[in-house]
Structure formats: structure tokens, C-alpha cells
Amino acid sequence: MRDKRLGIVMLMLITTFIGFGIIIPVLPELIKEASPGSVELHLGLMLSLYSAISFVLSPIWGGLSDRIGRRPVILTGILGFAASFLVFGVADGSLTLMYLSRILGGLFSGAVTSVIVAYVADITPPEQRTKGMGLVGMSIGLGFTIGPGFGGLLSLVSQNTPFYAAAALAIITFALAVTKLSESLTPDQRRASHERRPSRWTAFTGSLKYLYMLALFVSLSLAGLEATLQLFGMARFNVTPLQIGIMFLVSGIVGALIQGGVVRRLIRKGDEPKFIALGLIISAVGFILMITSHELWTATVYLAVFGIGNSLIRPCVTSLITQKTTVGQGVASGLSSSMDSLGRIIGPLLGTMLFKLQLQLPFIIGGLLSLAALFLLLRFTVLDRQAQAVQEQS
Image (tube, rainbow, N blue to C red; front, top):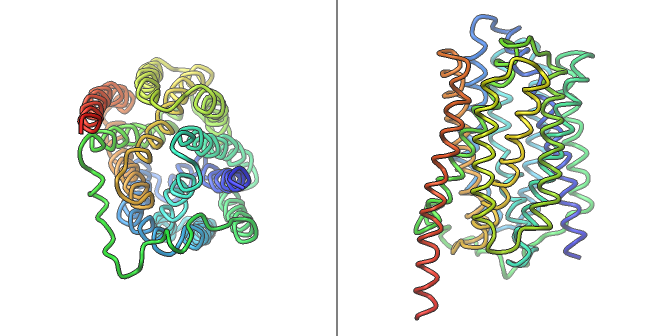
């Protein structure tokens, strides 16, 4: 039963993030058509606005799912996603509608991603948690792998076509969830509605606070990369939406192979910190190599190097958080998603600002943040071992 549910959730994540990834190659071009003189400004603002709303609401969605169950929250989020894509599709050069679409996307994003993470945590025992999160990461990676490639191809039809396709995929995902997704929490496991829901910051204590900060650093650097990579490619080698889709396709394939192979099969409980450290170093190397790129093929290879590192980090961090948390999985996953969103608030604005100053700066800062996160990992490891020693002695 557990394997069947996990397979359904994986398929839902893949289709959801195909829809999410489809828009990546065309977003800068659409903004450029609507506002030619301020592409960086509106791109950074749209990406950040989406994440700012998600940051506020993700723990609320997570806490709500602790009380009423995961399934209704996930279904609501998928429908909201479909609406947001549809609004952008009909925007037709209207910046107002583009911003409205991003608001809707941010409103419902936490109801999908963070609650699905909590769902997987519900149905996997602690010793299998890293494998489960590896499958989550692999599914998201596959979605991003297929999505930008499709987005690039669909842009040959029209710039709006990828958004209609994303909305259609979200509706298909909704139908799948309605018919196939069962609830992961029994009534007695759900927090009674009259109980006070713990603040998301109750999880931000002890050793875990360093892990949450590490997740913030990783998200911030990734968001900065996503916001500026196409701008960098346009400046260096005249990249097209189709080519940027191919770049993300290659990186996504590599990342999915890492998460489906290395993370799922090789990482055992307790090994996560070692692989997080390795991932941070590889990510930093990818960032620094990107600075030297003046051709499509080298940029694609260097993006794949970064993708390898990121694919090691994210599922291991998520697994540790779900293992170590002392609050409900929904609240813990909501806080984790909020930290990711906080990085995605700061990252696009910082990245586009740095890009305007000097086009290499976003990648330099991204590499430095990856290395700085090693210190946070060290602090988490030391404090976690100390806490375990105290428990064993008591």
C-alpha cells in the first residue's frame, strides 16, 4: 500500500513540476515584450512576489493539513496552480495579469509541495525517510527535466502556449489525485481543530535551526541562478528559449539520475551530512565554472555540475528535518518550504541586481554561499551529536 501511494505521489509531483518548468524558457521573453526596458526588474519582482506569498502561507497550509488531512489541501493547491497558469496564458502582454498569475501561484504552491513532503513523511518510516525524500527530489527533478524542454518546443508555436499546456497538466494531475490519492492521516492522527497550532518557529531551535539556515542559503543561490541564467546566456551567447530549455533538460536528467540512484540506493540513515557537504562543494564548483562559460555547450555542462550538487543536498536536508523535528510533520515541512520560499524571495532580487552590476556576480555570490553553508552544516552536526550524547546518558 505504501509503495502504491508513493508511486502516485511521485507521478503527481512529476506532472506538477513539468507544468512549473514549462514556463521557465519563455518568462523572460514575455516580460521583455511587455516592458522592454526593465526585464531584470520585473523578472526579479515576479519571481520574488510568488515566493513571498508562498513563504507566508506554506506553514499555514502545512498546519491545516495536520488538522484536516493532506488530501484536501493538495487538491486545493493543484486547482490553484491550474488557475495561475491560465491567467498568465491570457495575459497577452499585460503586466497586471502577469503579476496576478504570480500571486495565485504563490498562494497555492505551499498547498502542493510542502504538503506532499509531509505526506511522504507520513507513509515512510524513519529508516526509509531519505529514500522517500530522494524519490520526491527525483520526481521534482524529472518534472523540471521535461518541463523546460517542452516549454522551449512549445514556444515555437507561441509564447503563451506553454502556459495553457501547464494549466492542462495541472487539471490532469487534479483528476489523478481525486481518483487515486488516499488520505495519509487517520482521524485520530489529525490535530483537533480547537488545538492551538504550533508556530512554525517552534522547529527553529537547537541544531535544526542551522539546517534550516543551510536550506535558506541553498535556495537563495539556486533562485539567483534561475533568475539570471537566461539573462547571462542572452548576453554571452544569444541563448534562445529552446536552448535554455535544453540546458535545464540536461541538468534535470543528471539531477534525477543522482536522486534516483545515489540518494535512493546509497545513502543510509546517518550518512546525510556527508552527502550534504559533498553536494555543497560540487555546487560551488558549478557556480565558479559558469563564470568562465562563453558557449552553450560549456554552460550546459557547468549547469549539470551544479545540478549534481543540488540533487545531493536537497533530499538529504529534507530527510534530516523530518527525522529530527519535534513538531508535526506538516508544520515542519511548512517551515522547510517557507525557508525555501524566503530564499526565493531574496534570490531573484539579489541575483538580478548583481547581474545589472556585473553579469558574473550572481554566480560568484552563489559559489560563496555554497561554501559558507558548510559552516552551518558543521554547527548542526556538532550540536546534534551533543544532543544525542545527552539523551544516551539520561
